[in-house]
Image 1 (cartoon, rainbow, N blue to C red):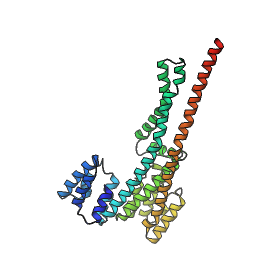
Image 2: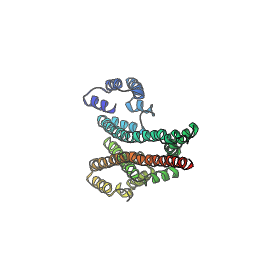
Image 3: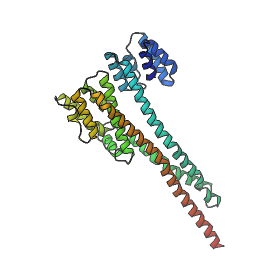
Image 4: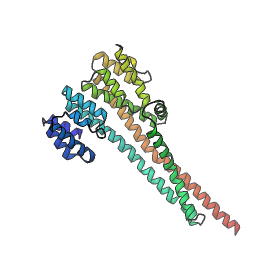
Amino acid sequence: MYHKLSLLLKAGVPILQSLRNATKTSKGKIRRALSVVADSVSRGDSLVEAMGRHPKVFMPLDVILVGAGEASGNLTDVLEFLSRWYDFRNRLRRTIVSGMVLPIFLIHFAAVIGPAPAFILKQYGATQYYMQAAIILGLLYVPTTIILAIVHLTPKTGPARFMLDAFSLRIPILGRAIKYLALSRFCRAFIMLYKAGIPIIECVEVAGGVTGNAVITRMVKGGADSGRAGNSICAGFSRRLPPDLLSMWQVGEDTGKLDEAIEPIADEFAEVSELLFKELARWMPRLVYFGICIIMGYQIIMGWRAIYSMEVYR
């Protein structure tokens, strides 16, 4: 939708007509919300005012950027930035989902096949067979339910969220992927805000709030405080941030071309994060294979013991 709007506006199509055209090619809740936004604009409301009435569809960062784009005359560029941002998010989501489909299928397959030999050999009745299948499925659903509950029930701010985010950064592979994703989100959000004409201190504050990780947010939070004190933004950043980011940021502040300086490092962070998520998705099936081999090996040993016991009894 953002990409469609940016193309239409760049071609000189008026904003109301662009919204109407984008509505026709959108689907679901986005189409319904965009239709209402178009009606609001036709009655004289600004685009940012109309979007702000649909917080479940348009994220706060989207509204802030669109408002800045309207005020500065850079709305087309802002919409294209948002288009690229959501394209990147969707690629990551597809990578994670595609990597989990096969492991989930294999665990369900193991739950059906694993207890089958004992059931065929009359070691298990139907009730025991279902119980064994439920135990195997529990290896997937119980930890998943606990993890999702912890993530969603933990407050978005405060010590508990900070501890949870700090722990997530220490998980092998996943922790590095989360770290670079958070840094990429910070850098890209800052670039979008900066190019939209928002003051640099406000850019740092808003971008720091959309990293998705409280630890990374704390690392960059001091930049705005440093700027208010009359010092460079970079001087307030945590020294635990990647040296490349600190160096490029300092160069950008010195040259007055901050967006151009950190854009390459933002792209690099995004690429590294995507590669790490792909690596995680590649290893997940292998871990599941290993687990299934253990389950099947256990079932074979138990079946062999049962057969051996019957032979000895005879």
